[in-house]
Amino acid sequence: MHLIQQKILDLLDEKREIKMTLREIGNLVGDPHPQKIKHHLLQIEKRGFIKINKDGVISFIGQNAEFRSNFLNIPILGSANCGPATSLATNSIEGYLKVSKRILNQHVTTEKYFSIKAKGNSMNRAYIDNLNIEDGDYILIDSEDRTPENGKLVLSIIDGMQI
Image (cartoon, rainbow, N blue to C red; front, side, top):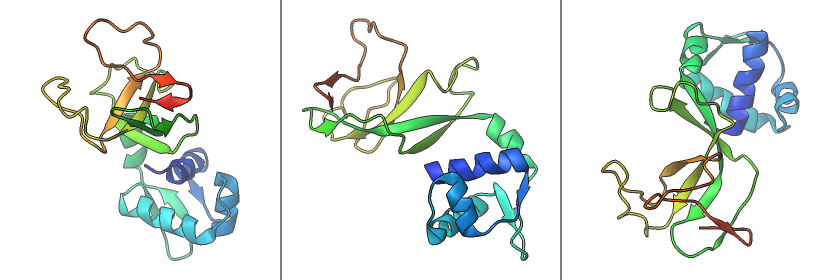
């Protein structure tokens, strides 16, 4: 899910229903471009999270609170090369990856994990639970695991470059 969409949903999670102009919503979520906000609102509505009525009132659909509670929003912090270090490491959040709590341990917090998009094909023979890492895959990184065991895969940042 895009960062702007997540911010709009967070805004609606607090208020449950809003009637604002696109510019007002944009200013609250950090993007003052009304057409971008309109696009993101339509995408959220298409996915069934919100309903926009003919008067411009935007409201949560009841099932969404339950849906959201079953998923974690893992921040996407960019991409990492699978091979030579050519991507610059950043700490800016590019969006969020929704991950089912059933996949991860129920006691996991979103602060513990972040995700990176794989760039390149050199990891396509690195099998993890009989699956390989392909170009464009999202990889979950446990930020608290600082002592990898022999045979484990790691994300390294060397001189500001991710590999």
